[in-house]
Image (cartoon, rainbow, N blue to C red; front, top):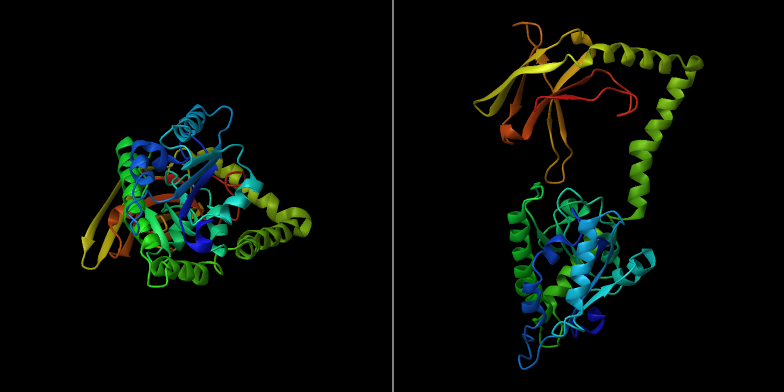
Length: 356
């Protein structure tokens, strides 16, 4: 495709087209696509630039929103003024994905955050020298930096807000018409798009070793399979005594777990820290059976935080925690979980009780 000799660039967006996911920003307003498809070549301005956008996808039979996305894109691709520049490929599957990831210059992925399960197709593009332009979600939330590709979104969830969809659609087309287009078509004296090639090299060198099936298998093994095997060994010892004890404890707690609730929660700034205070209604739950903690979602490639809150002597069910103020107080939410619990949610333990 385009990257072999750099005569033209080709972009691709492929997914299961779902009403809440799909090629949302790219398909939000099909009109702006005509601006991009018909723009003149920035080097030879007398003729339109040769670009191809490949779209591939399918929808679940019961997903009406996804089926309408398929309808809209296939109709758009057949319009006379667009014909030959946008191609909709039907029956997206692994074989078709393999052809796309090894041929396109730019892989575009625009799900609503946090509906991206992972983004493995974007990872496969790396080794083939393609670049990514994607929502900051899935693997791209960890991988993105400006020197390896492009991103849309602010890393936060906005639900189904149509105004946010519109804003991200505008940003997508601005990037394609501006930075992406100029990076590909600005050539040096030998005809090479040096800025594009620099991103290609950085993307392949930095990201390819980090995002691979080897890492996936290793992390599944180390983080899940091996601990699960150890849990099985412990529970099986002494004819399953540990497993029986866990089951009895959870059964006992479940009888009063529904009585747990937050009566109050507040925070205040003290110097370089936030002070959090909560008051629980314990009902019939023994304080020794619970762990009260502050939870904050992962950000900037770091793991999520679980910080313990300490019981005070003010009154039963009173807990406090002091946390550095390098994150806003609103990032933290108090919750109650079973203490010392080795049970796996949702089958072997009780659900957390959240402050909000």
